[in-house]
Amino acid sequence: MPNPQLNADGELQHLLSIEGLPRDIIVKILDTAESFAGVTERDIKKVPLLRGKSVFNLFFEGSTRTRTTFEIAAKRLSADVINLNVAASSTSKGESLLDTVANLSAMQADIFVVRHGSSGAPYLVARHVKPHEHVINAGDGRHAHPTQGLLDLFTIRHYKKEFGGLSVAIVGDVLHSRVARSLIHGLTTLGVPEVRVIGPQTLIPAGAAALGVRVFHSMREGLKGADVVVMLRLQNERMSGALLPSAQEFNKHYGLSAEKLALAKPDAIVMHPGPMNRGVEIDSSVADGPHSVILPQVTFGISVRMAVMSMIVGGG
Amino acid sequence: MAALPDADKLCEKLARELKAVVKPSTAMVGIHTGGAWVAERLHAALALMFPLGLLDPAFYRDDYAKQGLAKDPKRSKIPFEVEGKDLLLVDDVLHTGRTVRAAMNELFDYGRPATIALVVLAERDGRQLPVCAQHCGAKVDVPAGMRLRLKRGADGRLSLELERA
Image (cartoon, rainbow over all chains, first blue to last red):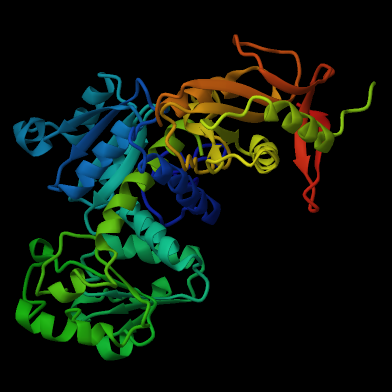
């Protein structure tokens, strides 16, 4: 089956998932993002690349950071951005996803940025758009969040320079996390020799080991010697049933405190995709401490999204 | 066909020519990649006060809609205030003039220079925009279907070469 993300020339047409993306395309996204980082440091943070193009932010699920950074990225490329508050509009009147997209297409859209609670929704949209229209997955169900995964990779490369030789620990609610899934695929594609996931049995997916990761249920063992610690948000809204005794209990065993972080390498970096639950998965002393690169992640997210948009429209 | 001029000698010639025009407000910007090599030479020879700026105008090109993003866009770095400077904009080969237009558009997003003068190692025919070089190393005749390119060897020596377009 052809890769739905690539066109006939093997260039990026849509960004739906890091899984299945060739290594050289991931590296090109990171390199292009690096040159856009130069643009975001100037007084005039704008280039004319996507002048006259329209970007529709289609968020069927709430988000502030991701939607805002997509909007800033598009605006810095000189595109016009239209934010649709989908929950409050047509869908609540019964319109289907594809009808919504067809109507926006009739308004001359060029890029759809889609977030949806159902896994696979952006794939469905990508199958039905016109050849000059492009789809970016901004998070679908528990499946994937590729731009977050890419900005995590960008952050790791920024601070650690190389991927070979790294040990990366992903901690917490891996089961419900599309961020973790996307990052794991990216790390293994780029040749990170040791990817670990740490969490209670109930929050680690059954097939985790098949993704090429080492599974730990103890922070003490899992954090030992790690170069990068990625904390995941405890996703209360995605949890049904009794997977956890309580948030306090979770914090005691799997929350990142300064004392647990001391088990990692002295120059380890701490990442978090946000929004953080302080005192649950991460203590304030760590979130605001010297190892934290959580706010730089947000800044890097803008140049990574600029790179993705310019590559899918211009052929990358 | 006449032999191509020696690129290292052209750099020396340009450096001598530019010495006469350098002012305290002069700063230099090289265009990636070939123009940056030439600019490194000239910048060192002229001992300018301001550090060398490097520009990759990939995000300002007018052929993006047709050809997409350049293969490997580099990060632009202008480590001085552009406002009010007398800029020497350096490229290797002046051909259509489109790179120079894109570079000037990008420069103005950093500030308003007092003047910009174009410095090129070599120029050929084929201008598509009203662009001309104020300082030019040599004029080179390029046969149809060929392209003039600057190469840099492992020893750092520069050379002009013809290759198929």
